[in-house]
Length: 97
Image 1 (cartoon, helix red, strand yellow):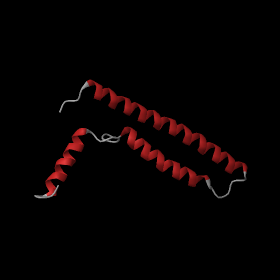
Image 2 (cartoon, one colour):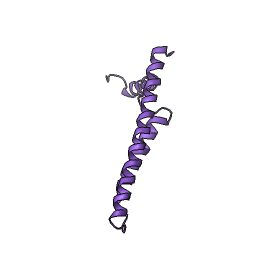
Image 3 (cartoon, helix red, strand yellow):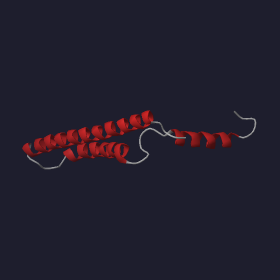
Image 4 (tube, one colour):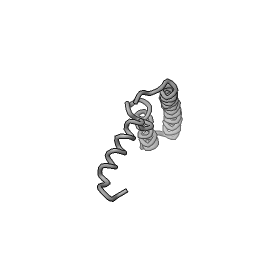
């Protein structure tokens, strides 16, 4: 099934928006991490509690990066949907919807 120009343009727009979202989230992470580290430092150091926020935000950053940059990430293609449909239809067996 060939993909028309409009579908390619929509997919290109989705990918660009996903990458822009990743870069914005990366900037937010760096700013928040800097602020938390500064507050920790100003409060006398000791136990590095900002690591917990950094860990949580870092996990979200990894998933955001995966959705933005890995091939096949994001919305499923029509081909993948059709293959899954055929697989499920073959498992239904006779007399089952």
